[in-house]
Length: 76
Image (cartoon, helix red, strand yellow):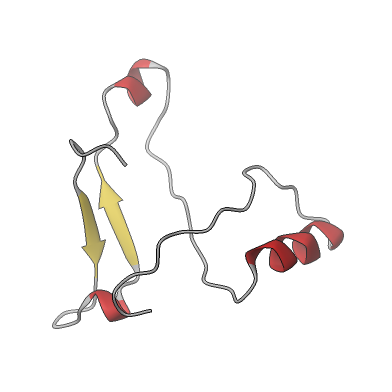
């Protein structure tokens, strides 16, 4: 992520990043300039992302974005 962007982690009142349940960030200017609109991008923690994606595809899911590992948070 660009150093100019701020990503705000959403947590329950009194919670920490350990029990976060989302995040928000402003779209970089180039995104709306290129026609992007605000979107939701859910993320799920799984033991094996490649196996989970393969199972979803076998069950009929359409893979729009390939699997990717994300850096673990401090609470992981």
